[in-house]
Amino acid sequence: MEIKKVVVIGSGTMGSGIAAQLCNANIPVTLLDLKTEISELARDRIFKSRPPLLIDKSKIKNIDVGNINDDFNVVKNADWIVEAVVEKIDIKHEIYQKIFKSRKPGAIVSSNTSSIPIKILSEKLTNDEKKDFCITHFFNPVRYMGLLEIVKNENNDLNKINSLKIFCERELGKGAIICNDTPGFLGNRVGVYSMQVAMTEAFKMKLSIEEADAVFGRPMGIPKTGVFGLYDLIGIDLMADVLKSFIKELPENDKFQIVAKEIPLITKLIQTGYTGRKGKGGFYRMNKSNNQKILEAINLETSEYSPSKKIDLKIDKVNLKNLINRKDKYGEYAWSVISKIIKYASSLVPSITKKFNDIDEAMRLGFNWTMGPFEMLKEIGVKNFFEKIDSFENNKFLENLYKTKDENFYGERQIYTNIETLGKIKPKAIKIDKNNSAEIF
Ligand code: NAI
Image 1 (tube, helix red, strand yellow):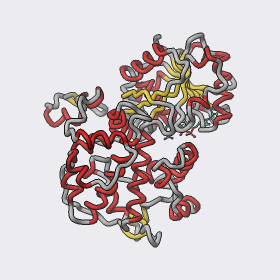
Image 2 (cartoon, helix red, strand yellow):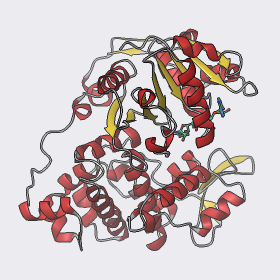
Image 3 (cartoon, protein in one colour):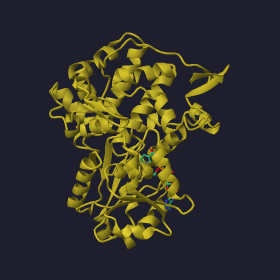
Image 4 (cartoon, protein in one colour):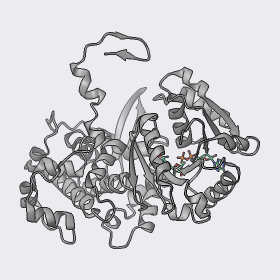
C-alpha cells in the first residue's frame, strides 16, 4: 500500500500540523475545513507559524486547500484520509459516512482523536470499512513531537496498518507505537498523570510553582517548562477538559482519579480568563510595570501574583539517586513524585501494554523526557527503590521485580532510543557549512 496523496480534514492546530509535516515529506496533501473557516487561512498560518511547522518555506507548494462542501471529491484520489476535526463524536461520525462513500477502495481512514475510543469512533462502520480505519494520534506541535500512537480495531487489515506505521516512521519521521484502545492510550495516560501528581504534590507540600518547576524539570530529565509552565503552554482550560474525559472514562478505583480532582484555584483561573499563554496569563504571567516586562508567578495559597523567583538547585546533570536522597523539601518532593509515577506506570503492565518500555518510548517521544518511568526505576536501582517505597499492592510488575530484585530487568531498549539524536552527535561533530535554514556537520 503506497501513500502518495493525503487529505486532511480539519485545519485547526492538529490538522495544520499534520498537513505541514506531509508537506515537509513532499507528499501532496489537501487540507479541508468548513466553508466558513476557509482553510486558505490555515495555509497562511502554516506558512507563518512560529516555531516553523515547515522545514523550508518552499514546501508550502505541496499543500492544497479547500472546503468540505465544494471540494470533497479530492477524497476520491487520496490513499490516506486523516480526520482532525473538533473532538465531537457526532461530527466525526458524519464525516466518516461521507468519507467512506467517496474514498477509493482500500484507502486508509484515520482519526487524530485524543480521547474517543476507537470502539465508539467506528461503531457505525461496516466490517469492511473497519478494515481500513484506525486512530493516528499525533502530538502537538506535529513537526517537533516524535510520538505517533496508532490504535487498531478488531477488524483491521494488519498489513495495511503496518504499512501506515512504516510510512509514518520513514516519511514523517515519527516513532510510531501501536497502542491498545484504552483512555489516553500510553502517552497521555502516563504523561497527564505525571503532570497531575507533580501539581497536586506541590499543593500538598506547599512548594511555590517556581520550586516545583525547578525540580519537575531539568533535574528529572524533563523539559524546563516543568509542570506549571507546561500547563500554561497547553492551556489550563484544555487540561481541565482532558481531565474530565479521564475521570469519565477510567474506572473509579484507578489511581488517576485521585490526582484528577477539580482544584478551586484552577477553576477560578479559567473563569477569569487566565487560561495560560493564549489567555491573560496562567500560573505565570507577564506584567508591565514602568514600561518593563516582568514575569510573575502565582502563589498557590493566596492566588496573588508576585515577581517570579529563580530557584537554583545547583544541579547540572540529571542524577536521580542524588535528587531523591536530598535531605530537603526538593528531595522529598522529587521522591514523592517519581515514586508515584513509577508505581502508576508499572500498574499499567501488562493490562494496558505488555511492553513496559513502550511507555518509556511514549514519554520520551511525546513529552520530551530523557527517561521514561522504567528507565528512572533502573537509574534509581531496584534495591534502592524497594528500600524507599512504602507499598505496591496489586502491582504485578513491582511484585515480580521485588521477588527477582533483578537490577538488569530492563533488557533491550527499543528502536527509537537507539537512534543517535542530533543533540548527542552535535558536540562531537565539525561544522562544515551553514545558511539561514540549515547547518551541515
Ligand atoms: P481545533 O479546534 O484547533 O481545530 C478543529 C478544526 O475542525 C477547526 O478548524 C474546525 O473549523 C474544524 N471543523 C469542525 N467541524 C468540521 C466539519 N464538520 N468539517 C470539517 N472541519 C470541521 O482542534 P485541534 O486541537 O486541532 O484538535 C483536532 C483533533 O485532534 C481533536 O480530535 C483533538 O482531540 C485531537 N488532538 C488535539 C491535540 C492538541 O494538542 N490540540 C493533540 C492531539 C490530538
